[in-house]
Length: 348
Image 1 (cartoon, rainbow, N blue to C red):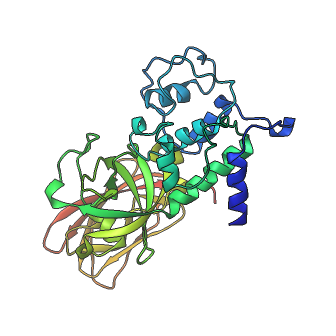
Image 2: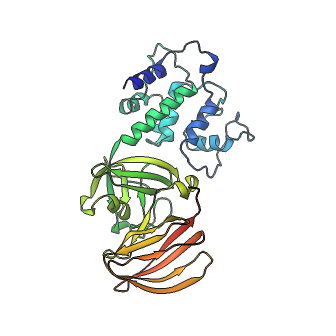
Image 3: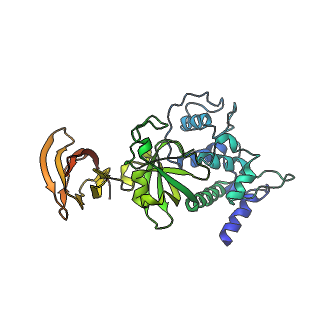
């Protein structure tokens, strides 16, 4: 607590004479730090750029994309070399972490958000807004991300009613996939969701918008929800750890995600992972008999297996090459399902 109070005091300081080693960080350099910490994809950069940010700037696309998403503000100039003020840093952090609609996060509403996340204290109206250093920005980011990681949310599930229908991002909703709906998190964001009651976690991918029930912060697919709680719970309390965009952070740093259900009653243990590291073996079993009909390998060839796997037996496969493997499985009553597994080579 003592370190926290010291950090807050530094952030709330009025302007002082700064030595060279404690010079304020520029808006340009600060934005790059804030943005890169998100591991967020930059796509469809079509908006009018700032007039004082050149295309030759390596951060040009990031800055222009953030402008189009109203994270930085829709002004004519970015003022990249100006010192970053405390209020600007807070607005960027709250908007980039998708706390709410960006238009609802402004200088006027900062006190409301700081009541919720007590990570800094704004100067009084009679004091000048301080510029902050890179160390102070790092402290601010750390305090805020720690607060977000421990914040408890109300989480619900959605399933059969929406199965096969389109999501807000144009995908077909698969209630067995490890996905979720969130009001503000960007498409393809990976989030580690932890049930505070039993500490079970699942890493989900955002592919839909919602929920729209007051007080709830995320709708988990049935597959996601039942990984960390009994379906009968309906609603749980959970924490969120935002990991980054699934297209950026890469398969080697993602937590295991599994396809488990052939049918509602035939469930694989632990399941077929979406990602398997080369050199590891796949081992699956079930409390009910199932059939491995065939396996399609990365080169396109299909092996006709027709292997019955009885309860207490294990089906094993140790891939020898990287690429996508597709398993064609059946339950004992003839219900079929395909499950994909990508084998990747990672440094250990």
